Image (cartoon, rainbow, N blue to C red; front, side):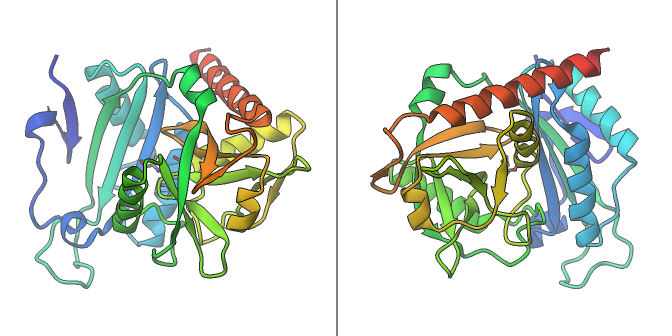
Length: 289
Ligand code: PDD
């Protein structure tokens, strides 16, 4: 079955889908993106992702490439053509094609690309085993709240983690506080059972999984403390985990050489993951009605 990509108004075979060499996304990383999880054939938190897309675009003064309704129709059609049941929808919008010049072009038409990827849901054993992270300095720009395609520091960090045998790198700011992972938000649970994650300022990307998990935690009667935490505090934590559209809630069992808790997924972390997954299923049921 051929896999399709959506590129500027056309559904093209994925293997032959191309954009122009003077697309400003390619030359200047002048664009934004979203990764929307797909579970049982449905987009998870689609409106929250589209809210963030609109916000990222407006911060960069790029027009929405089409109405929200049209974006939803194209997403649904691409998922249908690719028979996507579990995985992701990737959506990218750039300022468009123009002769190379740092200033914004006068009349740019935003360029939009969508692709999908089918993946298998993570196995319970893998979740219970958890993952390791390493700590690295945060060398990114100061507007990390914008979901820009400019991800070079993130790629360098993820590669460094991979080469160190870890799954993710947690980036640490100049004051010693953890900002976030290279493609995930960072959370800890202290020994006195306080659930902590960094507040959503310009310093981090406000993850959609992060937003949803705060709601899940509250519905489970677990309060969330939104404040920066240091790397030392993280290493001393009882539990730790990361969240993202591609991981949902993934336990962290090692930071650098330090084991977290007993070196296996924490109990509260697993409760939160189960609660999050139940909320995803409830969302699907509501959407189906
Ligand atoms: N990454 N922080 C960063 C720097 C991210 O790139 C991401 C997402 C997150 C988590 O956001 P969300 O819960 O909305 O996925 C936090 C995506 C998955 C990626 O780049 O592939």
